[in-house]
Image (cartoon, rainbow, N blue to C red; front, side, top):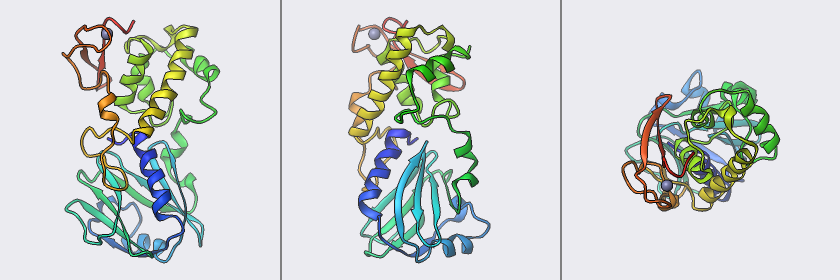
Length: 272
Ligand SMILES: [Zn+2]
């Protein structure tokens, strides 16, 4: 599933490739991903629009359009991909193709068809945005905020980091990696973390997400950037998906456990 670093990579790619272009035509190959009252309305709201900006909030991609000002919001969910190509021919999993004024095509591919595309006049129309917690790479994600919020919560730290209403966009891979790098047992109640642990957790969260963005994300399975290439953070993964293998730091056997229905990977020696 694309998480914050993967979505951020796609957004940065799209900024280089589609800003100031016009959407000259829209082809809906499979409308199940279109969240508009009719497909006709979806196409009408996009046709001949110019792309002014591309941004991200949580794991949603926001493509800002000019006249009238509106937003194409793309939620990739499990297997969505946004790929710019000089080829207008759709792939097997292409659900929507946007023809661009430079003759390139922006294809929305989605193998599992759980993603959603919607055009809105205001971002307030998207319930997901209202529920989201702070962005971990923005200024409002501070040590003092984190300290205050962790104190209120008895739940284990790992599922809390995965909760987008708590903090936006950290997915399962990065939550596992962040806790390993912080030396914190994922099962610890959030409120049991000490002052130094919280400040380390805060620093490591930013560091790992930034590193993952620099390496263009992790391609565990279907994730591709906007050029169709895989991310390179996979080689830097320390615990995720490595149960029964040796810890790189201490050689102990890594453990996989289920927490709130999700797999958690950790080192019983390094994480206390
Ligand atoms: Zn270890």
